[in-house]
Length: 465
Image 1 (spheres, rainbow, N blue to C red):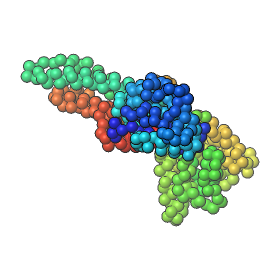
Image 2: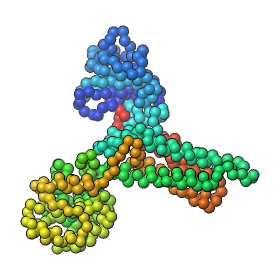
Image 3: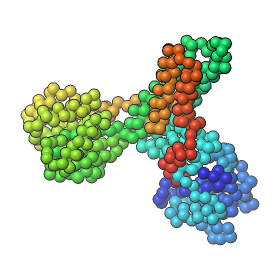
Image 4: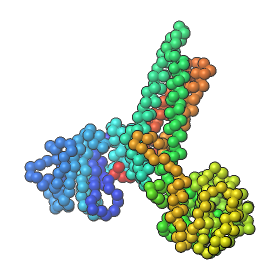
């Protein structure tokens, strides 16, 4: 990335809308836009406008016909998103107009922005650290209130603040240890070993708490995994279609129709659930179907909530065999017994079904997926089973796999420091482990990084951000 180049892109989502926004950033941003912008107020030039100015006018090829009426906003460095001179052009949302605006900008000397290049420039110009930049992408992709708040807290620097405090304490820690190395022959101690142990334990506790929050963060970001399991032809695919409110899975009376895993997400009262329709479990000689059944077992182990769907009208003679296999893989998970086709049985028949599962400790819901009977109660049960804490402003939750891996490595390093203090190992080994812990924390915030890492991170962003 050449910071001397002025870049441009459409920042609004692709497609037709009421308005679209073209963003221009770089040393020549104001100059390039000034060549094609005609302010309504005579004698006005973008070149003389202070930052924060909004002007109405028209956009046109120099000396050519008018393309559109636009609103132009000027941001002067360093007071902009990227930290550079930036201009945002709000035009009408016609695809033709968007393309022509971008064409005009490129003709004036702008380069087309790469994915995430505006945010990458913001990072390189010190407007945000790397974890905050990644939170921008998470904020754009957020699909629930919890995911939005989690990303917003991180983008505002709550996570960065905690990491900066940890790194500051580690820096103080390593400075005292390395000072002792300079006076090794005099056998002088500048650092109180009891205080160092207390500090190491405090840092270890904070890193462990941040790393431990990843399981919650992953669920908030990607959805709570819910596996729909049971025998063939009990209504799992029909139930999936009802929960998603669309015909996502093929429904058939033929046993073993679902042979692969089908996944999709839905927002229920602000909580994202990732429903996984699995192959029906049964004894079969079909090799392809058995592969699907093996994947079912894998999804049971990966899911947080199990919806065990049971056909009220036809209880299998293999129920004990099935119960054993599901219970074995769902140990410690939240299970909801979903008795389907309840509209086709009377109270006595329902009682017989109920009796078969008296020893199974799980919540029970009686529904008809086909007729949508009691499916709202099932949704309430799912929300109750989720039991997600409500995030408050300032709460720090880790949701990024890169951050989690770095925290895990930092945790291992600080534990070696704690162990070394207890065993009285050499100062230079202690210093090495402390610096390794600092290194991994620095990887998260971008104090230590490479072009390859930056390319991977910002390459996932949309163009225009």
